[in-house]
Length: 323
Image 1: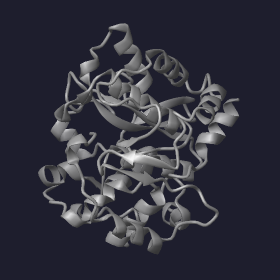
Image 2: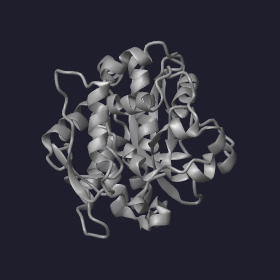
Image 3: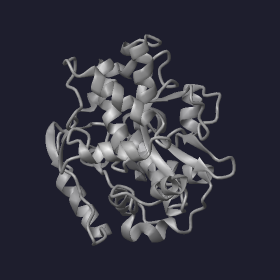
Image 4: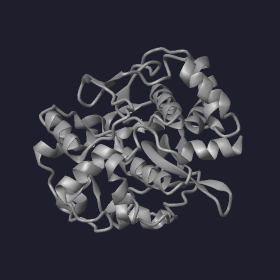
């Protein structure tokens, strides 16, 4: 079973498949720290771009954060600056993105190197303590020590100084990031206050928010890595009543995804409320959006840029931005 798990997470998903951009990744090292530095030179967190990096993102580029697939994101990166990926771009020539895209890029690069890796949806303790803020990290398999480790490729030297971080963000202590399952368990047991989990500055917090993260984490564990603002199926509405027992079960299934590998997979594919549908609701754009399904033809740089152009005029609601 272990071999099946490692093979599953070492292969690409519809979201991490780089398509024709595979040639750009091939020269890169397979070291997590080196890959994180590469990623930090390609993307910039849009919300802090001005305050942290002195770059004010123009209105016509804000839709870049909505590029779900890595093939499309790499296409946009090369459109902005066609140098090799190893060359760090100036802030204004980096693609705008959020935590999920930093993470998915690392997942994609590691999978391209044959390293098992997966996106995890949960809550970070180091942005706004004592709150746990909505966040995504890469969980990768360390073959040397034979254990899964957590890496946050978003945290470059600028973030380190701003947050005064004192731990290794590429081997993150489990106390500093709680998966959605761990957060749910703590809230349900009374060990933690549910109002500390969510997006503090937007006032989006509580058990309903953690429940939504459980659904996104289940999808990511099944290699459908969605955006943090994608809503579908079983995710509760803010402050609405919902079936606690259902999410208790979901938290139990995702707490040890390796030990119960077959069951989360079976449950995900069998449950319409968990499985990502062809269309989801983009809560930032305030509209339904069709998800790109896997096809036999690989995306091209040209087609990716054209798709982005179609989205540039969409209204963005930045208030519900995750960290």
